[in-house]
Length: 191
Image 1 (cartoon, rainbow, N blue to C red):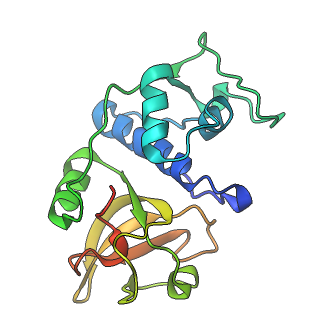
Image 2: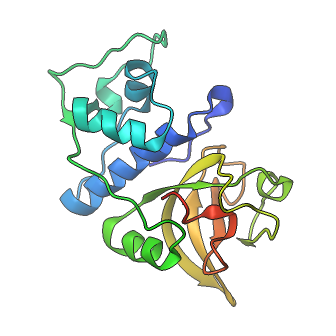
């Protein structure tokens, strides 16, 4: 789906969760759908993380963007069970800190929600190239993105991650996070 700008709403984990579900559906059913992130936001005010969003989806299902009105945005749940409902049965986790497991699951399962340390100015001001920050923490995680692939640029391996800060940030909204560099910024700590 398109890169979004979460603005001041701070909903990176909800966007990442819906992106992960959309990716899984695309891989398994060969269909690209756009799930309503507002469905989670308005119907599950206690959903503060990716796991909460996944659990909510397992228990309740979600409407597509086209079936879940975004106007008026009034924090009233508008879920419509008579429309198409997207469900998941389960979710898994990458072995904490294991970049090989993250890489293998990206290759076989599709896009994966990843929590990282995004507190460094170098991250916030990222423009291009493979991002490596030696001062990043691998356990103080404060931002969630969607890892969508991996590769190498010159001699630097990376994970390609979709951010939620709009297309003007990074490489059209994406970042190449260092891969196989001691779990830099916690890319594999909570995926």
